[in-house]
Image (cartoon, rainbow, N blue to C red; front, side):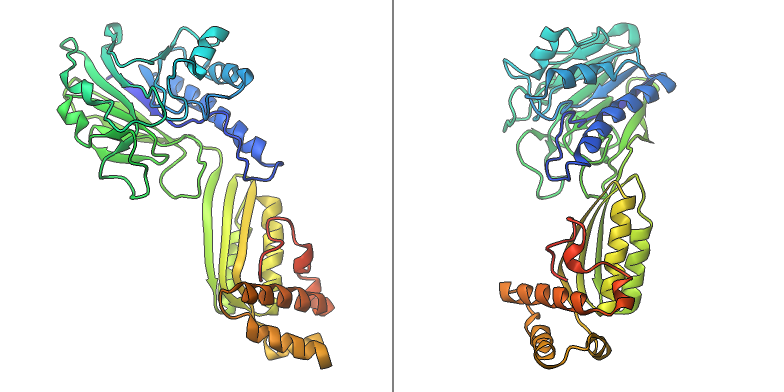
Length: 390
């Protein structure tokens, strides 16, 4: 039974500029490692070809070294790699693809489908209809030509396209580079391999997004996979199996703290993070001094354990209890100041945020030794959490 590995959106050369310089190169390197794992999976499953549905590179300006490293990463699978350009690496007159060819970096088994014309692999039993992007954004459906294109009888018809299936993706998806939702049926395709949506998504039985093989966003959308597609014969419904590829698990942690058990539950989630986690943390609500200290200590542990942790504590209010205030031994002016800040921190105005910051700094600085031992003062927390309101 003919089988294919469907993948897309490698975006090799992405810089991850919003991340700490210590972590950004590791996230970039993971994208190349994902291609090596794809090659190993293709070889292990003995697929007939790998279908790469666009955005192989993150930009036209990636270095020659990155171009060479990408094509070197294909080495473990000697069969055909069928690649189309996407919006990040469109087939311009002068592009990363033409540069790769001039460098002599493209191996013989990597087929760069840079023009809209059928490619026949009769000896392997299939034909490929590619819809390469020749500019970053188009407003016409570049896969429309599939409908009128005839291929020899007996060959599987495979489509490769990169863009947005109209009316079926999230509202915020760019409307450029449209693809008709019924393209597979209209073009008599056995399978339509899509790229651009970074998660794994079934459009219909013959039309799928594979998603990026290495997650790069804080969305739970099935990223980090490739699709193993089996086709018994022309006209047969494809059998599609998701295969894990990704190295890092990206996850968004959100919590609204109200009671002590909320803090404990969040601490447990943070303590569960490990070396393969890239996480964002957003905390709202309020907590007392002990809860605040416990949370900061958990954040410090998680920042050391995880690959990366980005924190947003701007909507978390420090709400010291009467016992907390008493323990601070803040008499006279300091006591009056703390009481005033507790009142002023309510709301979302800049003044309220300033009051929250001031209250956090002041109470942390005045905290007794037993609480200071639990967590460092807010002013000395690591960069990801510093500067955020408590």
